[in-house]
Length: 214
Image 1: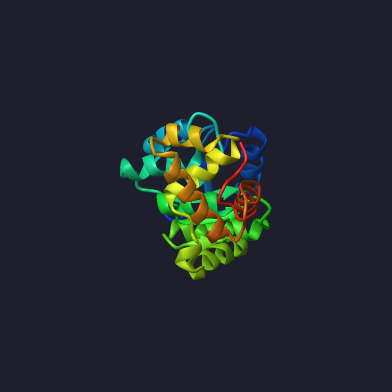
Image 2: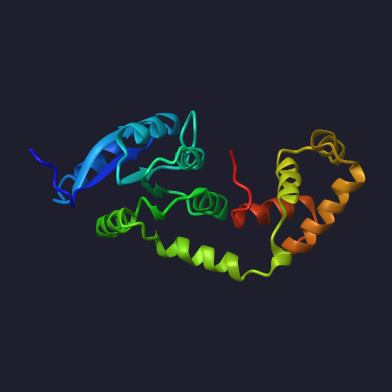
């Protein structure tokens, strides 16, 4: 049988079999969709993308072996001709921004109505961006935020270490900086987050999606 040129070939990458089966069940009902493969982690997802060259990859983010962002990066580095639509339950800045920066075409949440999913897949196949409303709002908010309120990569490293209960001395040793430099970073962090102590800084960072547990 000759394949329809308008058919959108889809690869599903998600570590939950129930999710993969559920997605396949939804997608097969659309005449222009064809699920050509699936993978339970990022490593296998990259391999299947290289093998199948699907039009669209539905990519989960938090997976074993290799997460979604890593898989997106590897697909880009290998110049695999496909468009990636992130499909996840997570909408924090620490999830959204790395995925978009890695090269995702769109970002949709798993609780989205199925019609939104169908529209997102068709948009991705055309190379067009499709962002869940909540994701678009977060990105706009981040872009509008004053630069001085955004933590640097080093400040996030320091704050992450604080969240793990490390002392200033331990943080300095692990990051190869002086204890005085750690204290300076903390002062800047407190100022940017509008807090006055370590615990409040960690809580504020978790609430804003700068840090995440686990």
